[in-house]
Image (tube, rainbow, N blue to C red; front, side, top):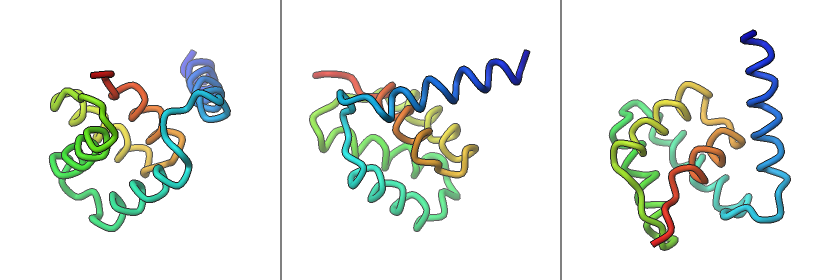
Length: 95
């Protein structure tokens, strides 16, 4: 059951990455990933703040609690770009 869920989740993330309607460019995502990795993502609160600043700088609102949850998931995934993109697109609230 878990393997099927992981495969479905991975496919959904790949579909979003290949979607022309992506909100963030590969360059933006790579720069954010670099910032997160450079800081070591030691503190989830700092990582969450960085996600919030990234989104607010692009005109999106974001829930601080949701950003903290997303930062934890990004950290657990080793800051993989597909996971980072997926989490950002789910966090971004149109203002």
